Amino acid sequence: MTTTAKTTSPETTTAKTTTAGTTTAGAATAGTTTAGAATAGTTTAGATTAKTTAAGTTTTAAVAAAPEAGSPEAGSPVRRRRRLSPGKPLPASRLLGPVLFLALWAAASAAGQLDPAAIPAPWTVVRTGAHLWTAGTLPTDILTSLQRAGSGFAIGLTAGVALALASGLSRAGEALIDGTVQLNRAIPTLGLIPLFILWLGIGETFKIAIIAIVVYVPVYLNTHAALSGIDHRYVELAEVQGLSRLAFVRQIVIPGALPGFFVGLRLGVTGSWLGLVVLEQINATSGLGYMMFQAQNYGQTDVILVGLVIYGVFGLVSDSAVRLIERRVLSWRRTLSS
Image (cartoon, rainbow, N blue to C red; front, side, top):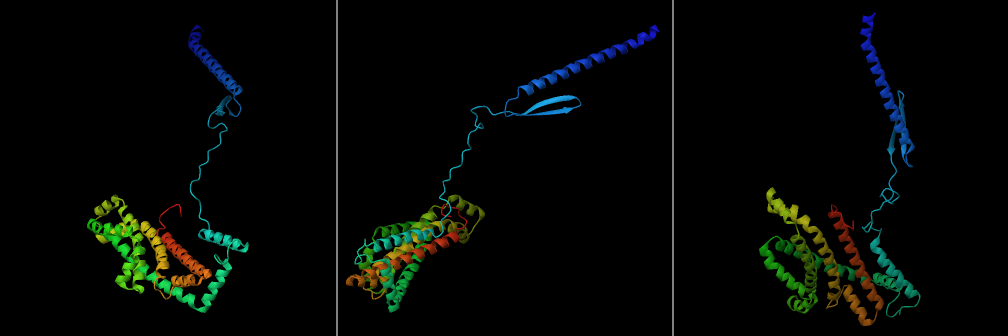
């Protein structure tokens, strides 16, 4: 019996040790539960507390804490990004200004604020234009003016583009051409009329030549500026790729010069109509300018306004056509106007 007691004594000791460990673990568990309870009791407003019970053990965790006072998250409004772009284009926005001007003109005429002898009413101008059209004189004058403006514009456009390419792609061409064009730009084009009459006669040739000069100067200046502004890295890239001269012009030069070219084209179109007004009053027998000059001699203000309105409509339509072509050709660009 004594031997058995001695044998079981270590086991008893182990049991006691195990019991003590269990007691210690229980105490630790109790302490943990107490700490969790304390944590749950001190949870601030706005926090979310989740309690999970598994196998008799309670765990308390704070998922979120309330933001501190004065922090950016505490009630501060989100700053919205300021819009700096002009926004989407308005439909028929090019017509709003002329329509508003026409409305003011009609309102002032109806209220008697304008002298009919100096500035006739819009309906008087329309009635006069209809009378000239039915008489057959207005269609002939319009066709003659269109032929003169078209011929001079075509010659000036071709000359401006050719000179810009020769000057922009060659140092020798720039030395020979650019200075001459700048000198020509400094001379008033209308001041060349007496000299051109002596050279080319007083017929149609000098009128077309003057219109061509008026057109080619802005086309050359803007196209040459666009060619000079092409990034040199594109030129180096073309050299590395081994592009030929023709491929370089087609793939690098033309796309890079198109924005400036269209600016010069718009100025050239407007300049052709401006030069035509003056030229058709010099030894002309037909055309809108001739019609206006004859109306001046007879004091027909309504006829003069008919000619001015037609010039304005032609200028607006031609500029809108150039804008439309530019938008289609340069559709790859993202600008404020688009």
